[in-house]
Amino acid sequence: MIHLSKLTLSFFLLGLVLLSSCKEDEPMLDCTLSTDWVGSYEGTKTREAVTSGTFDANAVITSQSDGTIVIVYSFVNSDGSTDTITLDPINPTACVMNFELNGGEGTLDIDYDGTNLTIVEFTGMNLGAVRCTYELTKI
Image (tube, rainbow, N blue to C red; front, top):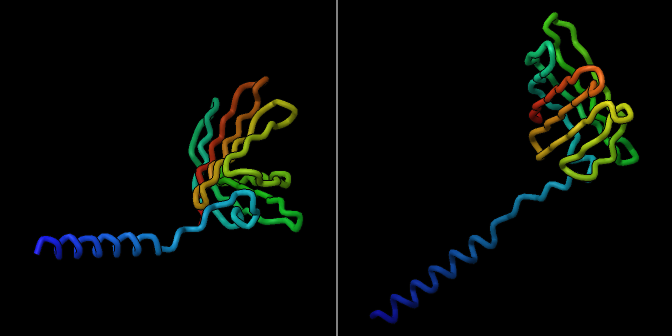
């Protein structure tokens, strides 16, 4: 009787292993493909400077025929006006990318996980630092 129980347990465990190994895996995010980035995003912009605040923000990322992406992001100012920033085309090389701005006057950091996009601008190193953080979610 004990021998039958061990055999039954062995088949049960084998069945669990087979079921778990047949589960379809989530596709891996390959941030080097421009199509992984394409879409609309919404969230907030937080500005840290002499005048600070949090504002509504959004972004649209499009893919170009050469495989680069263009990020256009905008935010609503405290007076209700909207500012829009269009980045030069970027060749996506990773999910986290860092760029120098204006010949060393600042930096731009981009972090993407397939759903959440964070853009951090740090500018004005010589005139007074301004740090803007965009926290956006794909819609």
